[in-house]
Amino acid sequence: MAVEIAVTGANGRMGREVLGIAVDRQAVEVAFAVNRSPVDEPIAGVEIESADRFEDLLAARSPDAVVDFTGPASSTAYAAHCADHSVAFVTGTTGFDEADQTALADASEQTALLHATNFSRGIAALRRAVTQAVEALPGYDIEVTETHHNGKRDAPSGTANTLIDDIEGVRTDIDDRVHGRVGEAPRSSGEIGVHARRAGDIAGEHEVLLAGNNETVSLCHRAGDRSIFAIGAIDAAEWLAEQPPGRYDFFDVIDDT
Ligand code: NAD
Image (cartoon, rainbow, N blue to C red):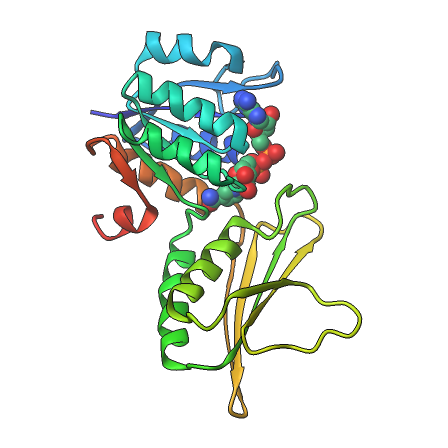
């Protein structure tokens, strides 16, 4: 039986990509799709409904999972609706603050909820490689650089923050995130440099640079286009639809499929 998904932010860069991939996937059906502002033309053959109707549509169509790429305020509201209706919720939205994270945690007590700052399997592999390299190279200076399209709202990217969280999990001597440098700014050993570039229509690039002892290691990932994120999010929705209430991440999907 096909997994029925609903899509939010349907007219966004990621929403359009998710719809395009979902309609081509045999094991998935699109129950409905919503967008905040009106969309006159169907996207990938799917009529786009008003976001105001989300909860009514959720109750009427009972999808197995919602796939959400919008913004923190809307994602937490959608998560709460999904919790009320016991619908699995997959979100790739970035830029959540602590209160938003608490709201997601609350929702995950009632339904299966998966948040990932990046749905690329390549980035999942990069995260594991970075952790290994940081463990193997104690004391090395580390700088993280990310590049995205000129319409991205949050900086640094959610993926860069996730990579830094991973690095700080190993390197307890690093406690200072320095966002760019200007003027006299000598480097201290406890800092990690973070650099966000915004240009053109770049889907996403991340580099972790480790330097010390007359050598450098550079681990990087480039997304060719946004389809990899949509494919990963739909993989996650198919998997999450079968899971009991709780909080999950993309490694749970990768390690189980
Ligand atoms: P975008 O601005 O192109 O699209 C956002 C869409 O959400 C827009 O269509 C907007 O109208 C809609 N929207 C906003 N509030 C809404 C609401 N309350 N109800 C319904 N629709 C609403 O942005 P994007 O590039 O598609 O990115 C969206 C989010 O996904 C960002 O947080 C971005 O960082 C993140 N993202 C995550 C991944 C990942 O793999 N996790 C990949 C790419 C982007």
